[in-house]
Length: 225
Length: 251
Image (tube, rainbow over all chains, first blue to last red; front, side, top):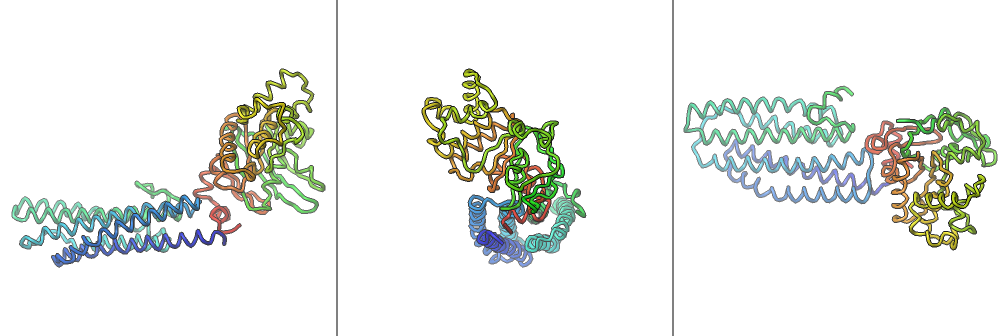
């Protein structure tokens, strides 16, 4: 083994992006919990934690760019650093989605509770599983798991469309619930976007490990390879 | 794309030691091809076989086929081969006592060209092509080759190689003794030259290979492990050994 210091720095980069991932994952967990419990204190925590995620994003980017400039990585190492830079941006956006959810929950909290025809916690549970699997595929370099994340995204899209239809119908039938239904609709869309970011992360894992670009449906070409 | 150099089952020996174990490679015309690999992998031996320099070592021999154009260089007089296939070495090696002009004209004179006008034209063209003309045009016959800086000496050697109008230019780590500015000039030069010439460059510097070459071959222990487009080799090589080498996991 040569270039020991460089490979130690790659480990350090992985460590940092995983710390960042933990913060983003926790933000989504708190926001979803805040929705279920209508808990304003949890919403506040999501908002308070967001600058930390933004700071971590900048630090990971700086570290990765330094490695590109100073070490001129090649092949799998180059792909790893490029993947980290992209995953970093996705994680920051996951943090933003959590903030959006928290803000909607804060808005809803001031209004009487309605029984809405959408199961946000169930959707959130699937989305969180996607995020968890995407990150696990990154930690373990597991492209099979990453492919399963890509497949799971279709299901989230379907749930989101169903939520849209159900909430639209609810708004028409019961105008009193329109504002809350709009909030729930936004939350469903935020969760759908979190799933999209998890999908992006899974695509980046496949790019890192296999050197295959599976974005925009190109995944079919690597199935089973 | 056309093939400038076709190498088939090339083997080379130093005494009883086989240094190349049957290399096959098609070098594209008017492109740069980089040859990389750890020390002792056979990359220099390989390119020295492409203009029969290898056999100038005592006890050295080569076997196989190396076609430049349609001609097998092992069926030609060595002196004709070196006219078709020029070479630039790691350390600039101008003739120290000769003027800059005579350094460039040496090959032509050796081939019997005596006409002053022809020699003047070729010297100017070669020095222009090697991007040295503007720096030396006023001292062509006053200064010796050895009086130039290292980078200038290397470009002088390139001009000397270009003077006989070769089809292929072999470069054996041409920048390893040069500073970054001189290296950049040589790399710019490679970019210009490969519009017309076929270049095969041995380099230890993988960034250099990725900057100048369209194709790259990775040698290991006398074998050509992988040969592909440069961007493929450096972003997603097919062979684990290539990946381990270029990422510094061995070597």
